[in-house]
Length: 455
Image (tube, rainbow, N blue to C red; front, side, top):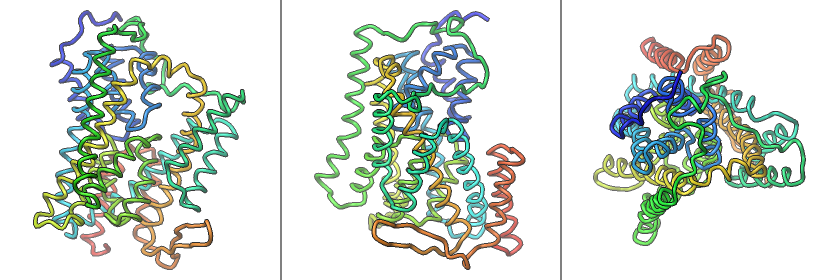
């Protein structure tokens, strides 16, 4: 098959990005697969090599890789305007859906049938997170050194409560040093093939085989756009720190800005840190509510990291002390979304012109491989944290010197939740059912148990 004859207009491309956004369920793996099918296999805007090249670059960056991949390809196609159209459309459906669900949850969350639906969804989320551990582990744990890094990161965060950013930084340093020392275990990997097959040759696509070396004017335009994105991100944060220190909005802006520069490894890894801080430190929401938020993100289009909008909503809804808590919650949710995604555009605009240099840096690739291995341990911790709070009604905390961990009170097991979780695990790992089927089935079972008077 030959390449398309003409570059689509920005309006034509926007329709494609809107379609991709509406179909972007299932977390980053599913979203990347949708983009691959639409852009590589069906429309041949770019080839397999170019697509993986872009994906590898986005994996080097903090933030949601699927959203950044859309932004980057939009930039390749239509410059800064194309990046904004692709990146914003990728976010928009999830933003609207999560905001609507946050309102419903805040107003009617204690209504029996709503609670029953989320009771079922929590079991599905537990199975999906465990599936993420397996998938990422298969890709990342290629040798004993990577396995050791994963095990060490799990122990560090589960048993000693070390912060996620420190674990990521130490893993990156170990990977970098290992590559510099010439250790074969730290040879950087090359990403993954979303199609699972040979793929479309770059020469047969619209963008061709070029490496994306753009003119000086195009690079300058991307740089200016990156600087503007940084200003739009940091200006409201600075104003809140100066004018409203100690307010919940300042805490939201500062905390989620830290997340924006440290969210390596995807949404599941970051949620382990969010569970530590938003639940344990700030007290914005309870563990069960954190699971409810993830259920929302799993069942709506867009990046899973949109769950942070729900966290910001609930934090401001409860802490702002306004006469209009729903307005406060909405502002908190939008603020969390703003400081989460504005940096994503900055990273693409500032880094994309230099992606070839980043991609060919072996030490940097090794650092990324080590971080990915550590992330497996972090996601395993998240799945265990979910399991404890889904299946048991009570937990106990053990503090002994540097040791700090949370364990379930075994006698408080919720047998109904345990059975539902076991069914979800069976559906995911044994029956190989899709995410949508598992989520819908779990929600339906939760509602049926409510109608039967069991939950």
